[in-house]
Image (cartoon, rainbow over all chains, first blue to last red; front, side, top):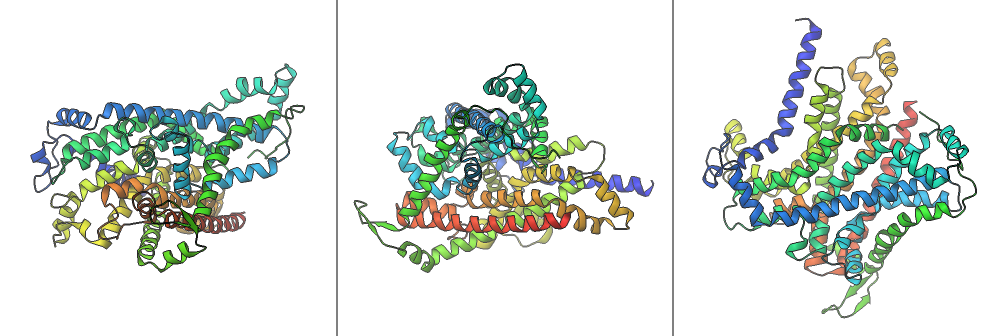
Length: 275
Length: 301
């Protein structure tokens, strides 16, 4: 082999090794989810898949009422992602297409609120939810997350690159700002919308602390808390096979969203890092 | 890159822009700014024994915190944890992205195989890593004992080791995200710059440090910020599942302590003061990062 081929082979070997290293924990989790309770406690640890996957899935699903957890988590993940996208589109449109008093101040102030993640305002936000009677409600789970500086930035950056000729042509055809926004700008933003959907869906699906605080009834719990409940229901020896079956199920929806929109996601991110 | 033009594109609609930003501004005002200001205010008050009355105590919540060894331990653990996530996580991710950013067959497949972990949540990562380090049956302690000898029954009962394990777990969860952004950043560096450096006789190492790394600084700064926020705040589920802040208080990082002070011990004043301290720390860090980013970006031109 030529030196060049050696180098290519080396790169492939390194990449395969890295993929194996990074993926191993999940592969191992999948293996354990197929074992029986006894097999999960074999020593040395067993790396050969067993045949108990289906039983473990059913057990995990029933033990923490996973169906309900999935429903609640899907509602808030899709809901929050959609609201964030709509609000960001509107704000970005205003910031890029209009001159108005206060714009120069409002835009940077909006960006600075990135410094206010939930934990720096967690107690008052909880009290606010209690005042609104929003404990154990979808509103309580979602509303504190509706602000999206990421979204405003992403769309603003994209809107600025839309040529003025396009706007002028639309105006010439008699389209008002809202017509132009709905019929031209939003369809043009498809890729960015999909990218933001992936980011916000995964972000919301992963929430743990806030749902833990703002809900306290079983029927409003989310999937992430379900994982915790699976671990906690066991006394001395955790049933790792069942816990892993539940964990695998919990990670499927965001994974599917990521894989379905992966092209838009990658393009949206590439666009964002073009400064 | 297109020049940034923020001109009026639809003159004669004086109210429309306000209506468009109203929902975002309202959400920010009601759910972000107002509660934050409330946190600041609460940090100067303490509630009486039965929580019936609050009294103004000035800076006492803060002085108490800085005097308490619990808080200092927690702050130190947080810094080590966040430092690990940021330094080890970003260096490793950049190395992987750099390796991936070349013309080789199957690049798309490698990309997906390396970034899909982005979809995992901190709680999922915590559960899987808890399995890998489970007492007596954990596969990692087994492998380490196999190759290096010296079997340790339960790593998670040793404070330093437990902190290291949760740091590694948290870092692992962010790899996919970091690699995606580094790769996008690397692909945006114009090839001519790299070619020019090669023509001038710079080796790969020189080229990386003199061209690639400075040109990547907007991405690096962005990722430093995201990883810092992540390490400070978003790992709650991972800690809650893996260690509950233990053993002792070895992994009791600020977010976990904050949760317990606020919602288990109902110590509003102390919790609010910690909220504010954390806010100041991340603000200062963000300003420093931004400062370095601007400097490097100018240097790159």
